[in-house]
Amino acid sequence: MEKSLGTVVITGAAGRVGSAMRAGLRAEAERLVLVDRVGLCARSPTEEVRQFDLRDAEAVTAALEGADAVVHLGGVPDEAPLPELLDGNVRGTHNVLEGARRQGVGRVVLASSNRLTGFYPVSENVTPEMPPRPDGLYGVSKVAVEALGRLYADKFGLSVVCLRIGSFEDAPTERRHLATWLSPRDCLGFVRAALTAPGIRFTTVYGVSANTRRFWDIDAGKALGYTPVDDAEAFASRVPPEGRSADDPLQGGAYADAEYTLRHV
Ligand SMILES: NC(=O)c1ccc[n+]([C@@H]2O[C@H](COP(=O)([O-])OP(=O)(O)OC[C@H]3O[C@@H](n4cnc5c(N)ncnc54)[C@H](O)[C@@H]3O)[C@@H](O)[C@H]2O)c1
Image (cartoon, rainbow, N blue to C red; front, side, top):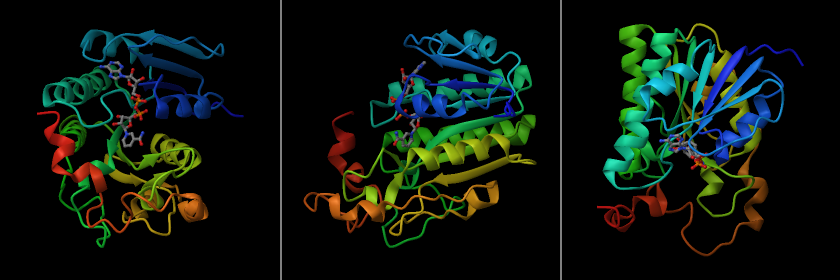
């Protein structure tokens, strides 16, 4: 396969999404720099590992030297006390964007989240242009992540893609996933498109599979050059009927419950 992606840095490379993107992009990158606060081992001559905390701005900038692109996945992936979210997600993203600015990185892909709009009702088809309605403090931190991306695009000319990741799972395991599932194959498709789409200053895309029951717009993803192929409907008969369902009034489902946030404040 042609190594068309040049040097790509993946932050949060030891995580669920990061591990899958690492495996998927390995053959296409000339150099894959894997960043995480936990230790990793290189699995090919083109892989380099860097172990540090994303709060360390100097280490982030150093890791981005010579990079063509960065896929920023590292951070707190769920509801947590606000100080942790500010540190892990907001400060970490600022360090990545500032490092990218200093090193002249050509494309920044930021992991955002569907939870930025979890308070919309399931009856509404939500597009990236609609105002945020976060379903918790984690969603608020992703509003800040996207705003930082927008600032660095508008003010400093970076090329930034925010990917609002749905429910990244091998297969849907609960009713909400029938709307929100993002298959590993589609996730890789979105990330690859986010890395390679030409002429982007700033854009936001829902990373969701082509689920029949989805409530997020996928046109922005098509404009980026990727149309998802998987549909959670194929798993509908295997998803247990009990518990909350895709008929819940809010897109965030249980994440939008007051209790889900109150245990962290
Ligand atoms: N998994 C999903 O369904 C989903 C949905 C929406 C958004 N996202 C976003 O995608 C990204 C990846 O999610 P994930 O599910 O792979 O999470 P994960 O927890 O599996 O992986 C996150 C990785 O980031 C690393 N990390 C966290 N804080 C760090 C820090 N301060 N410095 C260095 N490394 C740090 C962790 O060690 C971990 O390996 C996150 O930004 C998350 O918010 C994920």
